[in-house]
Amino acid sequence: MSLEICLSFVVTFVISFIFVPIVGKVTKDLGIIAHTNKRTVHKGEIPRTGGYAVYASFLIGTMIFLSTDTQINAILIGGFIIFLTGFYDDIHDISPRLKMLGQIIAALIVVFYGGIVLKGFSLPFLPDIISQAIAIIITIGWIVGITNAINLIDGLDGLCGGISIIVLVTISLISSTYGRSDISSLSLLLAGAIGGFLVYNFHPASIFLGDCGALFIGFMISVISLLGFGYKSSVFFTLGAPIVVLMIPIMDTLIAIIRRRVHHKSFSEADKGHLHHKLMFSLELGQTKSVLILYGATLLFSLCSYMYTYDTMAATILFLILMLLFEVFVEITNMIDRKYMPVLTIMNIFIKSDDLPHIKDTKPYREFAKRFKLRYVVAIVVILVGALVLTAIDNQQEEEAKRETIDILYVQEDDETELMSDIYNQLESAVQREDKEVERQLVAAYFVSDYFTLSNKEVDEIGGINYFYDDKLEDFTSYAINDYYENVNNMIESGDTLCEVVRYDIINNILSHKALSGLEDYTYYDITIKITFDEENSILNTLEYTTTVTVIYKDDIYSVVAVDEAAVEDIEEEPEIIEENEGEESLEIAE
Image 1 (cartoon, rainbow, N blue to C red):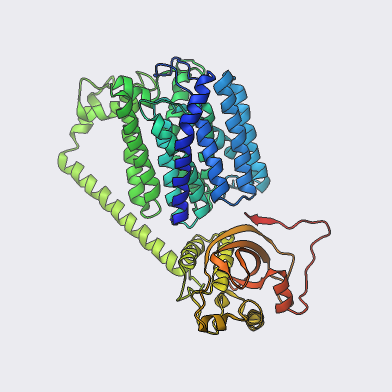
Image 2: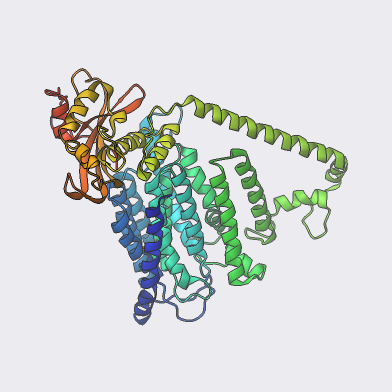
């Protein structure tokens, strides 16, 4: 994880820390306070607009650290609609239907404008258009569901904010592991904004999130999770991992739906049957202990998700154990109904406790249980553990064999800068997970970082040549010597301070209209990149420079064939241009 991504967390944390008391004072004077009802546990007049400070801090952070593209714009527009819906509800208490309408509109913007939809979803024997329609419906349902799940756990001081930070940091760590610095940065920007608020929201809270904050945070978490965590695109990894991380709010919401259905109540009707209420009242743990326990449970589920990237079997075993403990807790605290105790009833066949529920005729079951002597139980446990260990070893060997079959065909330069090394690590990850969009983007980034960096160059050395297409390398070298590298040898020999590329930002990644003669049958991509130098570049006379790199996919790798439109003409005197149909726009591949 880069220093800049960590810095984004610190910046939004500080901004939020400053904004929260200001917002709290203003809105309390305006009378925007939390009213007590059947579900609340607070006392006194407490402002409910902490979410305003979270939202404002996050926006400022995005302006500083993120480059906008279609997906980011869609997320920000949808987030703004969600925030306005919640903010209006904090003031006027709108109906659940209107709140749902705002959430659906925001989800539609993310899906149709941002193109963020469930990846890898297909159903056998059905046309792709039907599978795509179902994927869109699931995506909208996911966004609305997680948005409300996060909102529902906002019942104790610090609960919603703390759990959200744990979830977002987990997403950031996993995304960073898979080379998705964009998802990692977006997650930490929001986590920092929530962190500054949590300082004032932890028990005893002086300000609440309100619907404007809880709905916005839930919406952002749901959309960020749809970006894929950086995993290989598939339904399981797109939703499986975030479901595990968000297990506490998801299960709390599902149980609330079942509980209210069983007792013939409306879902929008408030009650005190949530997880945090059971910990606080049924087990008499109080606010702080209840919140800390739920923090711990969320951390364990987050650990499952993170472990899955390294050890599938261990993560699965931990998840099943946690789910069993969760089910026992639900039954002990009567979260659904007093008669709902299936696991405890089965356990009591062996435990034989008068305090646990009994099956009406337990004699046959008890006789069956007696046959299981201790040695048989031990033998079964040993066999199961052995089978799990062998399966884990086999899975690990298969994974290693699979990785060995995927050759990293890209060259890692001996004199890499820190940025180049970071890009190459991400490139390796992209190749392993076969993410072609990210792969070509990183190839272009590595090329420009090497080409425009002079601090690591020797005399007559030209950067980026290992990433240029072989058949055009001679023309490219000649072009570089007469252009950017014309006076570099003199600069090296005279000991001048040489610049280094320290940052890059992808502006766009689109299908190219161009093609080189003799290579017309291949697909070309134009990748526009803005690079930042550590000091003003004495050749370009600028601290920042934007260039367009054209790459081609051939022989299982991406190779650079041109730098800027002018460079295409220098490399190929009369390049053959393949024109698209008149009026047809180029297809945007990734932002």
